[in-house]
Amino acid sequence: MEHSFTGEYQHTIDDKGRITLPASFRPELERGVVVTRGLDGCLFLYPQEEWDKVVAKIKEMPLTDLNVRKFIRHFVSGASPSQPDKQGRILLPAYLREYAQIETDAVITGSLSWLEIWNSERWREALATAEQDSVSTASQITELFRSL
Image 1 (cartoon, rainbow, N blue to C red):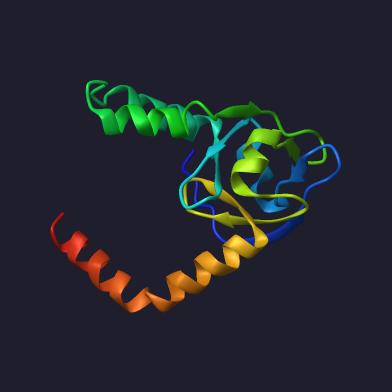
Image 2 (cartoon, rainbow, N blue to C red):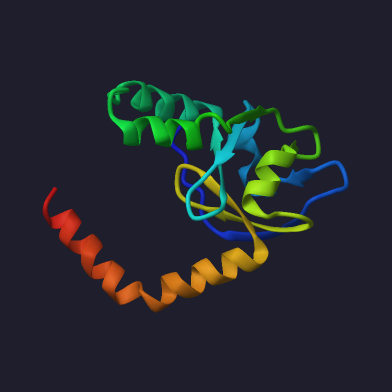
């Protein structure tokens, strides 16, 4: 199944460290998810099938490369599999909440094949930076697509 997660959703973390996944995404996430340290200070949440694809690609990377090992330490060591409950909630382990500085309020954003979970303030800052740099970024991305 090909995923296309889009949108921005405000959520709260309950006293047990759980977050409720957006209702529209739940059918695609019911087989299980993996949450891990993302980039830019957020968490990445992958449907299990997508996580399996990512892991397969990582396994192809050369372990002799220091940057690969650093990436694996950051990205893979923090991975936490979870099964959404009947209310669509998953547990965000304390070490992941701490990494992303998520206490009570969070923003879940769609990123096509995965979701990002942000501290609300960090999300506003990241979005403001993205909007400020949007013309320059679009130009660079356009050049990238031309080279494909």
